[in-house]
Image (tube, rainbow over all chains, first blue to last red; front, top):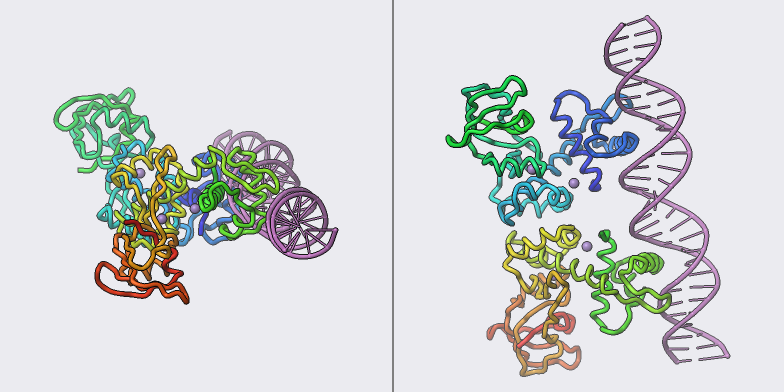
Length: 219
Length: 219
DNA sequence: CCAAAGTGCCCAGTCACACCGAGGAAAATT
DNA sequence: AATTTTCCTCGGTGTGACTGGGCACTTTGG
Ligand SMILES: [Mn+2]
Ligand SMILES: [Mn+2]
Ligand SMILES: [Mn+2]
Ligand SMILES: [Mn+2]
């Protein structure tokens, strides 16, 4: 059974490898996202390599093996299912769940996850709009675009957030930009790439580029 | 924050100290219930003593401090609330929950437990009839008697089990002796202390002393 | 193609945690 | 008082995770 730390590493490596498919993940990047030192990462990579969870060749970056990918996806599955539970059943707000789920994702009971999945009626998305991998690791790549890629005149429905930090989610709540909100781009300010948008056929607001490149929409 | 192992030790010490209130808990007993060696126990006792979680004086046995008792009771609270969740919400049988709860009891989020408690409608008893400590550590000592202490002619309702092993609970299910069942003692066989009982004003069965001294009833 | 810059490995070590066997000290029992 | 039981202490193991510093390797851009 993988330790908590191993699961966290594999999850981080999986996410980094999704950012740039095909490209190997670098030691420094991993150290950065996990808030640790490169030397620690090298150490862990060697161990995970020995366990057959990733392809590790010195100086060559790293990529997950089939097994490693599976562990990563199962961890993500657990994380997201617990987030759904916390929000839909326990009444947590979507900005309160991340840390708790970070701990719950390490529970090791396949039966528990199967029953939880059923209890939640087999959700496909977590509270942040991210897809929930199936028990066998299958995951659907969602079809979204970043709001920052929309041109004036285009519109869409908010489907997911890229960032799950508390301040960002709080801001979205306040601005009325929760999942499901309709966005219509009215204008794009060339100077700082901020956007003038209409929300739910109603209020008109200005959102910064920092916001728009962390929000996904679909038609 | 206490580690998993520390919480397990404190829980075990609390339970042992309840068995014989007033009497200090012995190193060997702890080693026995935790399936480890006395040397390891001494080691842990020293550390827990230094952390102020128990009174440790060499050769004198051990008793929990206020803080240690609090940690033990909160761990038991978490364990039992999760058991209720597993049975009432996820459809686990009462013989399937112990191991899973043994892991879940180590989650560290007071907010989570408060919301779970509410979600479960503030249950007072776990699926095995054991009382759930309050957030402040308050616990009600249940008023039961062991079935083995009943005399022929006496009756009662099954309120709790002392043992939560899978075979024992399975046997109770099969015999119709779940919580809430009515028991009437018809006869006591002096030779082996087995009891002839009537269950729910219906079937008459013989139960061994091993069974009857692990079953609690109240009027 | 080379040199500087950047990246990542390796070493040697730390620290925390949990465990254990052996031997003898202390306490309990008789 | 002698024996038995308990359990502490000591010295040690193993694992997991982390780290600074030095150097090896790779990349880049001139
Ligand atoms: Mn985590
Ligand atoms: Mn999420
Ligand atoms: Mn436990
Ligand atoms: Mn229980």
